[in-house]
Length: 503
Image (cartoon, rainbow, N blue to C red):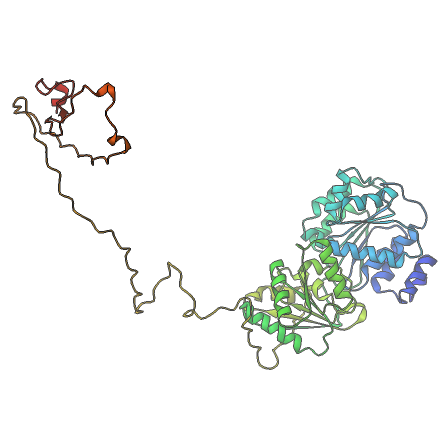
């Protein structure tokens, strides 16, 4: 194994850039992978996080790209990354190590306008770094031709499987030339990925510098038993942060995105310098938060697993697992954010009674029992301003349909609305009836309700019109025969029609 980068076959421009970055000795994965990449061999690289897998393919690619020239919309190399942050980080590596090269590097990720990306593609991209979804979008728009790709890099291959990118990877590989060089890199290599490599790679060279799924020896791992109650769990985390004298900065991982935002707000209310990072944030906010953490403007970065893979922040002193990861492989990637490049680090995992099966899976994966420690000092009291603090039940106002406690005095009955006083009106006198002839079988008909008398209107005071002047006035006591007025067409003395006498 080479003792420095000069013995790996890299070009002088690359070696100069590496020396300017302060690196003198390659890591194990770099020393074994770089010579094979320069020989244009397919590679499966397995190494734990923080061992320099990114540089193991960036440095030889820069050397190979020194000859040749990119054409418009036809990238020469393609690097696929599962997350935007990891793609942006690889882009930074090309800028750092390729400062002596005149290469066009295109970054295709979501959250960035298509117009800016199209301008870079139209000039011709020597290196295309992309997430699978955005790259396929640009291909369907006719902005990319993949027939000129010589090198394909699939970084964090197992994460691609977990995130459901395998169908996209299969489609992209079908669009690439058959004669190409393919590089697989990951910290874990489950059996599903191993079966896929037989389809994507040709006679690959497997490089495994450490046992699969192992963690770095420079990381001190601990577990702390906590309660299931969210407010008590957050109080335990705050106590752990205060009890770590060597803490300079820390990444705190949560399983759910909504818990990231809740925990970040809680820590800010308690005076901590904290910020959240999760997949629902827009790309600009994610990059600003990440840059603030890298430049020590933020001390605590609360993140989902979007930040667990491949983020190269060398000086992270602590990692806290606020939630135990449901996938044991994620534990390896999470704690790999600390203890990088030979530095020491600390990883503390908060374990609730419901997390026992996940903890057993992690211990089985890493083949190591994580020591358990207790909280030092007395537990921190829960802040009354906590977002989940609940008041006393007796002081809480009852709703309309709240159940009354047995034995409690019955609340005062709401008085009924005052009803208007009813005035009994005497029944109107029944007018005299004139029966024309006795009808023994006739059923007495119902007396019709008497309509209220109309109030005199404006025309009641007027004089009768000339048309009705000769008509005699109708007396008010005119008899009614079975409900028929005497002035009716039937007359008072005439016979009553049969349909009026029918039952």
